[in-house]
Length: 255
Image (cartoon, rainbow, N blue to C red; front, side):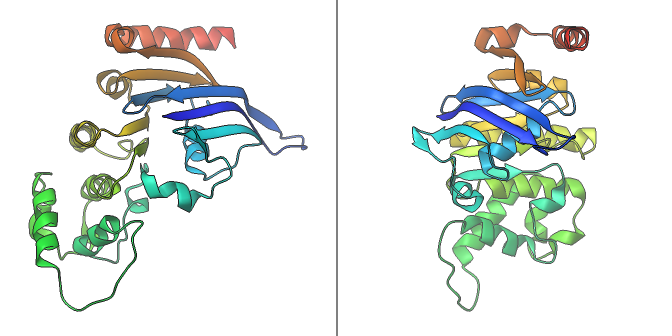
C-alpha cells in the first residue's frame, strides 16, 4: 500500500515566482492497484511521481509504503522496489551497451555485481525468451547496441527491463507519448500484461484519455495539485470519453 499524507510542496518558495502546488494533499493506493492519472499541464501529475520516487523532496507530510515512512529516504533506496519508465526512451536504457548488457544490469538491480569471464548461457536463454514475447525480433539482436534501435524498440525494452528484478511499484511517466500509435498500443498491451502477471502496484501518468479509460482499475484527474475526479471499479468502467472531456471543461470554468 502507498500512502501520501498531508503533503505540502511549493516551488521557488519565498520568491515572487513562488507556486504552492500541493496543499495538504493525501492519497492512498492499495496493493495491486493500477491507477491512471490525467490532467492538464501543470496539474501536478509528474510532480506526484517525482515525490513518490524521491526525485524531489516534499516540504511537509509523509509518504508511506506498507506503513513504513520513506519520506526521508533517498531515491536510490526507494528504487530498489520501484521500476520507472519515462517518456524519453533514452532515459531507461544505456545506448552504448548491448541489449544483453542492458538486461543483465536490470536483472541484477539491487544485487552485488561480480566480475567473471564469459556469458551465463541460462540467462542468455532466459533473456531471449523474454525478448521473443515482445514480437519485435529483438531476440535475434541481443548483441546489438541499444543506441542502434528505434525509439519504440528502446521504450519496449525499457519497460521490460523496469520489471525484470523483483519490484512492488511500476511508475509510468507518459511512457507512450513519444511513440507512434501502433507502437504505443504494443507498449500498453505489454504494460497491462506485466502489471497483471507480476501483481504490481502501478501509477501511470498519461495524456492519452483512451489509455486512461481502457487500462487500470482507477482513474484520477488532477488540477492544480488537487484530485478533482476519482473513479474506480464500476464507476471507472462506466466512464466514457465524453464524460472525461466534460469534466475538463468544468474545471476550466470553475478555476
